[in-house]
Amino acid sequence: MWTSLRADRTRRLCLNAVLVATAMMLSYLEVLIPMELFLPLPGFKLGLANTVTLLTFATVSKTDAAVVSALRILLMGLLFGSPTSFFFSVMGGLFAYVALLIASRLPKAFSFCGASVICAAAHNLGQLLAAALLFGSSILFSYLPFLLLAALLSGSLTGLLLNLTVPRLRISIASKGGQFHEP
Image (tube, rainbow, N blue to C red; front, side, top):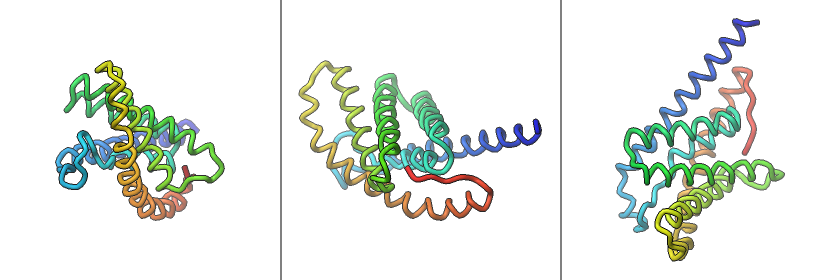
């Protein structure tokens, strides 16, 4: 029994490590994509790393999703960020995760696209709140309509990526005796 439990813990730790590494790689890749060419909004990113959080939420567990998201934010902040960018990331990640928890409790109201758009909007709201707290200005909230439009676009794209990825993972997870649940 102890051997089986230890093997399960090791498997879960390794899976989470791969998921954190994947999220970090996608987060770094986003820095290399010049988004200003597509949507000229300061600070706009696609949110590719957040697909890993949604994927983890749907295929592993809510707790693992929180751990993967928190570790990605912490490690990216330590490796490539500043205290200010770390605060923005924490607020965005926290708001997005809470929105995902709320969306998951609603009775089948959201697809992956819907959940991804909601998370993107919450992420943007969290970062806007961080900016308002740091700079002491509520005028920043006039930027919210543009950020919500960006959330609609980026959330739809990441939701489509999840729609393409999750069915393939569902088969793999089911064949290994794992569980799968939608957000």
